[in-house]
Length: 610
Image (tube, rainbow, N blue to C red; front, side):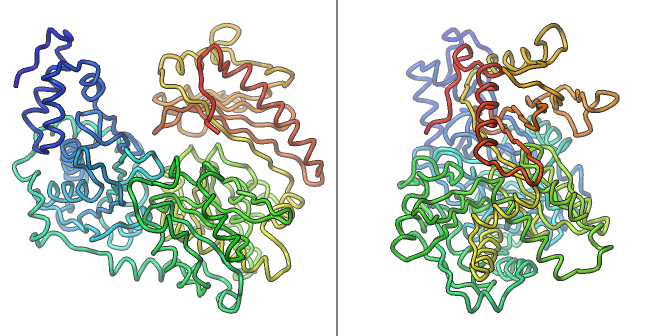
């Protein structure tokens, strides 16, 4: 069927549509595109074919549906063909070592897409070129994929998931042979190879080959056994766990986590947590929540709180749908529930893992070999603990891809990497997985709670004790929604040329700016040569302002969502325990940043929905 280019006058768009009609074999997406063509739905065609999904370090993430802008059978085949070619360039032994593929429970009946189907098509592409594939026979948490790369010494891993995104989305995440997420230049290499391999290879659509091919193995049983054995390395109080009567509630928010967290509790000899019945089974519709993201706080946890009240549990654990993140909430004496921020839980887990390590390794010299990592937008509390206790703390760029790769470098040098975290409720508590892992983190958080309870304390009280010893680190993070890339670019360019070319603000309301680091341009006022130490990236916006009152604020764009995020922290010296005053000061700083740097009314920015 021809498409009349006179309708739009856009030759590039026309070519993309014609190519699609030639290549697509999924009856649902093919019919949808034919209908758009027949109806002359220019706007809809522009949305689906205006630009190909960009393959970046986070892989792909987009809505499921027809066209090159969406996740569907054809774009999965094209992406995997590119990845396959790139792996052949990078590894002479890819046909001996192979690739692992995992998937979550997402599905989109309208377009015929699902994580399981995408995983099968990706497998068909790879085996058609003689690459062995370890395809999980059922849904798994994301951490199982990097764990498998490491265990089986594979060349790469693919996880089909959109994590905590809305239900219509899906994603395609790639791990390299070091079992960490890809970092540059691999993203560009794979993206180029995709463009060079758009036409489906003869056997790419033949998913029936997957069932019979000797190149396909299901690693689920072996990996399940080995993973739960590996995480026992970070179980420190088995006898206490066995005897404890502490009760927990767990929710997997309609995702994959339920059975795996039950197994993690069993591996730690903890009493099984009460599972929220309405949310424990995978459901791609996520019917009980507006957003399937425990980071959004109380709205996602309403059913968990109700079950906890009924069962007499004081702590709730929540995973996101692919179980690589963890949220924790605790009932307070007032009867209210406190949902810990990612930074607060990072402080608790970091404190706990160092304490347990210290008990096992009391020799003072060994502490110099210990490292903890956090992303640059996360709390600096680990830095404060490291300074006092003598271990190393390192900051990385945002995202676990950077922490996983740095952790691997350190481990290869014989160092001990105890812990890494990011404020977006991501925790790496066990070096067997070089990525965030909500399954092991759930068991470790439960063991920590069990110990704290035996000591007659609570998680909230222990957090206060950490701040009393190392100084209060209070944070306030949020975001604005903005779909207009030009507005975002202008907002950041204004900050870079504030009072003339290449000048940054020296004041923000009543607050004095004492330092600026711009990881888009590579400028850092705190370095003698004004050059940032952390890697820079022109493709994303990120500026950090340091203030003379001890405040730090980072503004950055999201790689996977239409958001401009901000992260603020006020670090106080130990002994400064006027929390109310500190919170007021941070609130004032955030208000000033919003008013003077974001200018939401002028830029038509929508605040984070309540």
